[in-house]
Amino acid sequence: MATRSYGLPRLAALLVLMAIAVWPDAAMAHTRLVSSEPKANAVLDAAPARITLNFSAPPEEGFSEMQWSQGSEEEWQALEVIQQAARLEAALPQLAPGRYKIRWSVLSRDGHRQRGVLEFRIH
Ligand SMILES: [Cu+2]
Image (cartoon, rainbow, N blue to C red; front, side, top):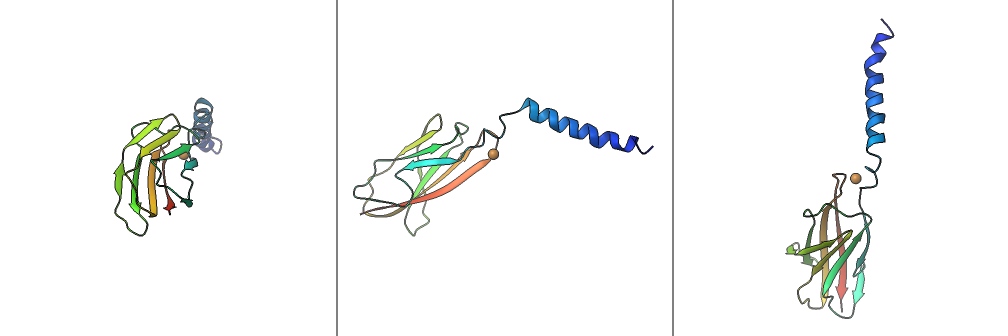
């Protein structure tokens, strides 16, 4: 009787181990922002023509978004994102001197949504 009650938890544990063995790169598909151009908190002498985001792994294509807004405002304008493997690029409109924010959102291939905001300033 007592030994029987261990059957189900053991089976569950075995299934979990099998799932990990069959899907070893699940953790590796989780992406994160590695670098950007302009860099976060950059102070620029000229308006950048585009924003580039480099991720640790390619996000799921077609699920990436980028928006921009002026410094203290929350009026987000969509940017057209072009993805090349783990790199996202978007052309920026002609920006006047001031503070700007770029908001981004990507879907990792393991299904996790990643978001972030970076700021920069144009002199
Ligand atoms: Cu993840």
